Figure 1 (tube, one colour):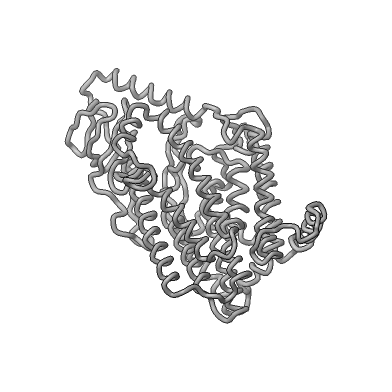
Figure 2 (cartoon, helix red, strand yellow):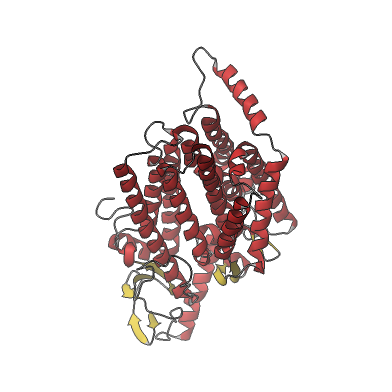
Length: 494
């Protein structure tokens, strides 16, 4: 196979490593008969259709999916109860109290304190409404193309990526409303219980509506024909309303902007009660701001990710983006608000945590930028956004080394930049940042570390899914990739 890279021709075989320089996707040159190239392209498309349509039972099938759905609801309320009733400790029966009596009393308290009310409903649905309206062409942004969708005749979907402008307008509007006493940001923290129930019910109901709607719209895809499993994994790949891609909207806007606003509310409430924002709270506020800002400033890169391209929009994504991520991931700031109050760590401890957070964030931001900009360059869709703050050094690779798969010059595995040292550097950074969130809370309780354990477990499961998918897609080229980059998380360690 011979490919063109800005005028130079390089002969490659499956697993060969070469430099990838292009302004547009590499073109296959006719060093072999045209029919051979056409046949290779046809086989590649056929294989893509087969992989996209293949039903793989994951998470333990229907029973595993059902278990995850039940436990997810328990986790959300368990963590709420920890901060609300147990001073950040583990919810458990008191001395001499039976488990049954304790459970009944806890359920009664949750039913009382988490019952939906008008204020919480206005906050939640006002936020959701703004997230949807702003996802239309109302706000300025960029257009980004996704990957060709095999189940839709390789149609390329266009995404309106304007989360960045939505993000800053939202923050400015809330700051003005808070300053002029139109809406106190502390209200969100005060309404956390009712908001929890509304988010949970909304996630469940929307999942059911989308599942049933897929049948009505004849948009079902990759079905296992087990209702419980298909409800969990989803039936609809790319549901859209008025041009708004709902999966993208929830993936970026609802989940991460929602998380930051919950954290911001906890910080404002702390300042209201104790007179200032503590060091531990400032670390969490900084961490969640950086993470959310990175998601919105790189929204156009998300269009080619596994969640958007392959995953159907089912309960797993809907519930966790609508309720799980904002509520579970914001446990630490509410722990600090409830348990630590205005307690401070030592200056040295705070400085080390801040340094680890910032260094890890730099690696995470730049390695994700390298990976996603490489994909965009490969498809000829990369458009720099210098005004999207911050633009960090080494976010874009020049002349990256790649491994090319057989029969498809556009199927390339990146072995340059951070990915020359480990295959999942971005996962390592996610795990470290999750640990920093827990360490900001100190060592008084175990639940602040629940998120880091939960997230690490999820990452390890995703790693197994990634490897299985890449092995099927790239074959021998993936084996060569693992040989060239043997370390997964930490160079020269693991």
